[in-house]
Length: 65
Figure 1 (cartoon, one colour):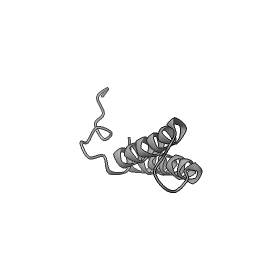
Figure 2 (spheres, helix red, strand yellow):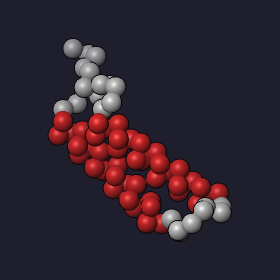
Figure 3 (tube, rainbow, N blue to C red):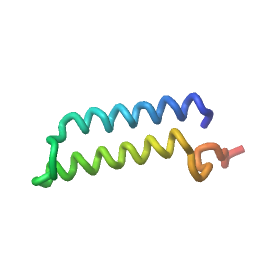
């Protein structure tokens, strides 16, 4: 996966995290729904970090060449 594709996908995941973060209320989550939304925000930010920074070189490897 080249750098441009990684930036696009990482930006999309940041957009998902931002949209879900808008729906969260400030403070400590008090319901299962709020915890699920917070979990989605955390996972989306994690995936954005993986795509933007590629810390272990997983995305830059090309195993089928």
